[in-house]
Length: 437
Image (cartoon, helix red, strand yellow):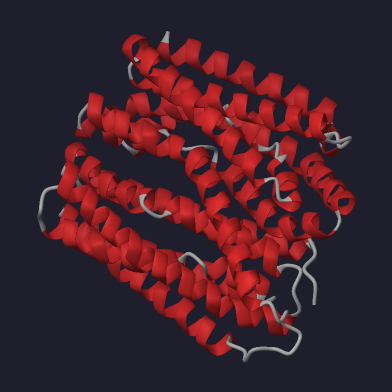
């Protein structure tokens, strides 16, 4: 059975990402209502550290897993899933030790109960985050939709209830750990039930295949670290140059448009196996997706830009007014977010190019952030991030054209894309002038 970018797969992943993001937003609203802004900053910093020590290598494993197993038969897929499970659990243990070393050397947190809970979070959270990839690869889309609904509803009920009843930030961290434990048991059960014996069709050079997998994971993890590291570098800068309250304002505002993230994540997961098999088919499918979704994504983002200052004050309170401006600037990232040239790089195995471009993007972000934060404060860090994203996509598309005859613009409805980009920037100008100038 080969994976194809069916609408059911893309739609299922969009639903999964929607449930995830909706739960994050609803929980943030409850936490902001139940805690003072400094405690909100402490909770967000714990979440921030938990993600910082796992996001990059987990992303590398999942992307390599989808591209490698997307070409395999069902029995081989089940065999290798158990191996990927072991890789992730081993890396989880390794990075718990890395975090412990970082804590000893740099004192990221005080030696209190939330810190010990964070060690446990780092140990189990990566396994739980494999659920979507495993269910896609085993073609259990109905189960994935049900899982997305139930697990994120449980997240809302559990964490929001604890926040409302106890109004204590340490209790919230404990509730978060219990929720992650539920995910860990689910994925462990999935892998155990899907396990397969060593299939006859598996290549004899199993060790060579393993070495190839490890090298690919290392490259993709380094790329994810360099690209995704921007969010964490920004967070570290805010924590270093500002306080807990400013960190809370920044984290509540520094969020890209939810719908664009849902779309990009779902399309990447659904189309990556397809691009590995047939680039022309993948290109045509991506263009169809963009033609359909650009008016929806950009139109919704434009409306949100106009309304967000009022919405933030209504939902979070006047203390988070600056968060709305940060959020509006982040909404402009949608202009580059919908471009997905990295799919071609994944499919062709151009991992070294991804790493180099990720490094350039990170350096641009750091240098500009250090310069602009002295002139514009928190807003300067956000502006630097937007510029770095733009530089990244320009490098992707330019290098792709230089190295091959492939033109990524063939995958983009250019007229629609440019028109809606201009309209989005007009909305941003109107909102900024009316609310902040």
